Length: 495
Image 1 (cartoon, rainbow, N blue to C red):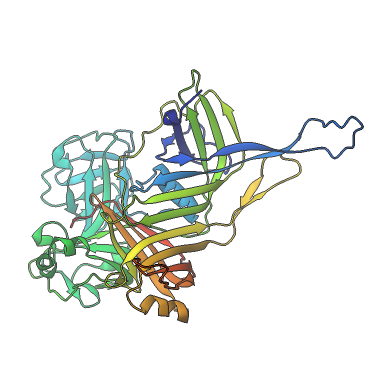
Image 2 (cartoon, rainbow, N blue to C red):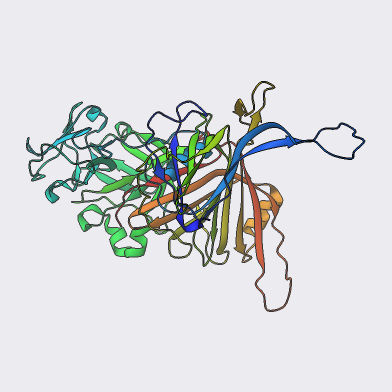
């Protein structure tokens, strides 16, 4: 017998659908339950027998499918949740420039501080531009773990100013350099009514795209606009906005936080944090998933090959954890007693996110839902409408075709005014976004063009109850982002 508490689930990205990489590096999955299966399909003979008996069932084919339930935590790059999101969105993450030793010392980052103010990398350093904010973590010497504005870079170096680094000639496997934002010189970045401006810093060099979110202001007073300091800690933590246009010296923003105003930034070195982003696309991503039943005297390992996300759901309900479910469609599989990887990477350590405490915003039509239409709940679903392809000469599916990327969801609000119900009646498209933050990290789900398709009928169902308005929505193509759904992840920000 075995126990669910001794069940290990791990996965790895496939380069060829249905083919596990040679000597795969498996990564353990965080989950609350699973329904994965690799199962044969049988049919019965139609023969008529005079003994009223039936012959053995006839096996026709077999396939992989099933799901995983999880609680939402930050999806670190290359983590199982990050890979699952890639499969759900049928796209790859667009990450800010990053350099990661990823378990192998002195591999990608090869030095810190031997040359003053300089980190050395094997390649790609030129992607880091003047003004970028780089966060250095995981170095042996604490002095080398810091955030700094970039002064210059080459293909193999990233240089700051006055960093006071300690020479480290073989950075450990945990070492990482990542662009987390940008900063202007003192007084260079100013706040406009509709965004940010600069005199010297060229915004077009920083890799920012329309539809991407930014967080304005750092923790130190010298990196924040004065009006955000005056507004208090809660306002500083909520100073996120979305980019709609990029010019050399202007970032046009919408979804600006409450109380946003103009500010010359006199004497301030303003910090602005930026995100990685993914949006729905046309690039299939498949994974191999392995379950290990470790409580058995000789553990069994069941493998599902070519697993692609068919549906992906996120649920945000007041008073509960943020939960997710994912349903896969796959190709082949099997069972054995040898693990694909004897030492899979451990699970990530990010804290589970919750409604109320961590949902900083549910925005509709560029305004945070609040009095009198407070939000009670929000769900989002991606359906890739996958279809398994069967061939008469194969006992497993030979491929998977995708269909339309259908993005739907539900938003539950208190019925405090006519605004959203009127939008439902009129068929008025609404941009919807939801921001979740925890421990200096953030996720922003956005459906930039959604139309309410159902619900929207406030009813007094009984006495002593609140009248609610529940809206079922569906996404359509947004011109600015060319997307149905996007997800921004901030690996680090300050408030």
